[in-house]
Length: 284
Image 1 (cartoon, helix red, strand yellow):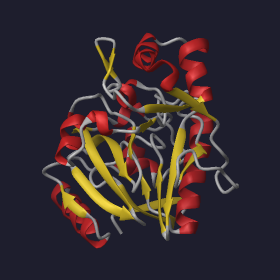
Image 2 (cartoon, rainbow, N blue to C red; image 1 turned 180 degrees about the vertical axis):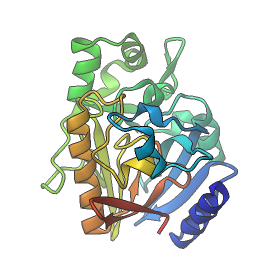
Image 3 (cartoon, one colour; image 1 turned 45 degrees about the vertical axis):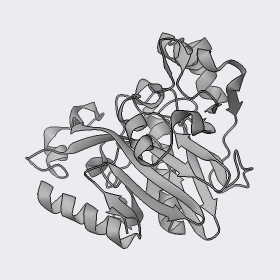
Image 4 (cartoon, rainbow, N blue to C red; image 1 turned 30 degrees about the horizontal axis):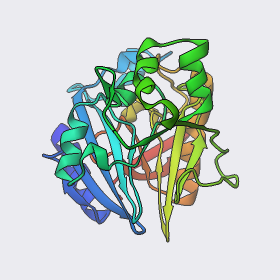
């Protein structure tokens, strides 16, 4: 089953018109004149026990006996004007992957953070030194306040500290409403629940669109068809489920590709309604 799934992902990547390289863990494609690359930071065996309120019988409906893979991804966006990284992963392979794209860390103009969990900000600093020497860091106001004031996390404080005034906060807009660009062609979308300020980013250029949805789900095989199931990592599981369903419904109705930080390669695809949930079609 794993081989069949992997083949489907590769075929899907080809139909999307992207440049697929599963060996390198890089999938590059066009959104209008923007070049977007999905970068695999890590990949390992998945763990469905993080899901809340489900039993083994329920999980067997969706997960094969052979198990499933879990990925941590970042997205790199090259526009005619800027180099933009969405999340940093743990801060390991992301630098190697960017180098394969011909981009050094000091050429990154902006880092957009979907939220402030460690597997999304691990590449911001090392030994107190900013690893993106010229980049502005963008994070939602709610997430920054939660992790640096309300529920102080030392790792978050250390990650942001080297950037000083180059950390810029913003307020995401409501999905479907009129939203100002955070950067040209990039709109921040409120997808609260996983964290208090969890943000998705709608990328638009010309006729091209992509919804980078961050941690809107963690176990794709279950949470696409059963979007009301949340994970133990979610700060507010009910709100996270509502945000997940809203994002999926919007992507399906508007036929916008959706990408996630914890979906296996190529991590981008179309969403279709299916029963009380949704079907994910990789790379279609």
